[in-house]
Length: 192
Image (cartoon, rainbow, N blue to C red):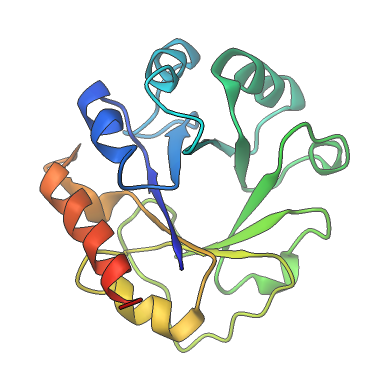
């Protein structure tokens, strides 16, 4: 069964709703419209049971930034976008999801625990070319323009370990509970 990651959550009501519908909840620490502070993420984290894993999303962070977030928020995994120092992979404290554009498959780090394939511009709501052949030894997350009406296609095409959605569960820049439910239902429907 493909797992679900809801990413870019910022509001308490969204987190409370998501915990019954997602396997992973992502907090964005990189500059973006979905960015949260460590203090905000720590408060939201308190609402998440141990059955749901919390992912910190970073773009080219320093080791100190990552360690502070792991410590303060209690992150279960980190998701790394962009160039990062090798020490983050070799001295990791939690599993790492390496996020790459689907056309950069040759850049997979051998110490990544998971690989997330995304559109060239992460968070844009755009898909990548789903004819692209994605092969990796690590469990694969697929992201990029996923919505309730197309997630079944990507699951059938790639059989990913997990699917990751952010803009596809939003209306007017806010998480939409109905879209979260529809996305969850669409993923589960694929396995009936």
